[in-house]
Length: 258
Length: 283
Image 1 (tube, rainbow over the protein chains, first blue to last red):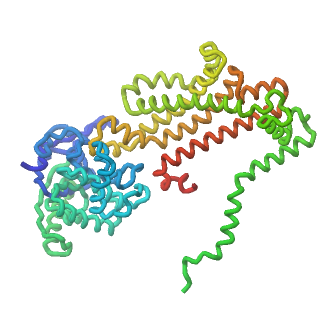
Image 2 (tube, helix red, strand yellow):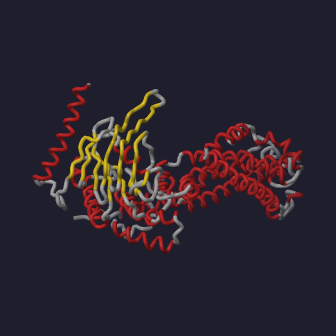
């Protein structure tokens, strides 16, 4: 049984102001195995974030079935950790309180909450900043808190929606390396949405290329280049050429259609 | 190579500005009072119509400490009068805060309350609180109750409006994050929506405390026989404009102090906000 099963997912947004419907996801079928690091790759507006939101339970598919660990997704829940594009931390809580927020909601006593959160503070390298508020930290540090917050729930899958898009190039590289290290250490299933071919190739062992709206799956590429990955190696560039060709094919097809 | 961190030449200028910022609050009031005193002493208006600041200060001093009975029956009774007003302010404001926040959060969060409760409240809102005075007197008589009722009416709506706004403008991604971490609907309200709405709720409370003082004084002029507003209106009948002005100053001072207190509570509660706001940087 796959960790995540998407069956015939269709999503139509009704644009009430313009009185028309917008087909965003068109019959998506995808199986994601446990401990996979899957990158959903596609241009802006292809519905990749919508697909992630459907798995997270934030949005409902118009039709189709979404199963996580064999259970139908109906609402958001702590079995699926989400890392948002913006850190989306509670601004009134310190780093450690944000990370331990899930435990607070479960009624765990403060001493134990802090005890368990410290492990994740260390994991994302934020020791010394545990009592800082989000406004006192950089974007990269806040995003680390967001990742630690999702990991602490020990979810079966982690859903990430372009979490590094707002970071500068250098911080982005560091965060990508750290994320891979965390994934290797903790063996969890990650679905990572991105529009960057390089990012997908650095991170994923399965890259799902999506088409422009309406979003369909163009091809799911398995990519098992050993890590750490050398982005200048011939294998890396072969894969990149292949994916870029898929994307280019897509835009030529669109240009001819119009 | 010279050190770029050497700032010693700038020091004396820095000290001067510091000294200036210590007294800058006093510059405008001092000029106003000096001008007023000079005008009052020039004799262009009879002293009974425009008492000089010195005369007002004298009246205020006697009202507070009762040293020479210039203020006759009020002499030495300031604390009693101020306390009477302050208790009405506090009573009405506390009730308004409680019900304003409760109703505001309910309306902001729940469609049901928005549809059932809000239209009625919004219809009551444009009615000036003072127009309730006749009804307040026949319902509650002449005592503390009509004043507290008026203060409640004046303070309730700013708290209500800002609480609704605060809840309605909570970032929906925070709500999503809460749901992702397993918050139930009660926790969503108490642990996410309420703290996120606090800055807006505090803005409402600060407007409300100002309205509370205004309405206490209004009520005391008409419906109550004690407090600063009553002294103000009573002195007007006896042509004691020095006491009228002393009462006005007392009200202004107490209103300012209540706002200062509220601001201090707000600064403590919203400490997390301080580094990101203009207010935080200035303080």
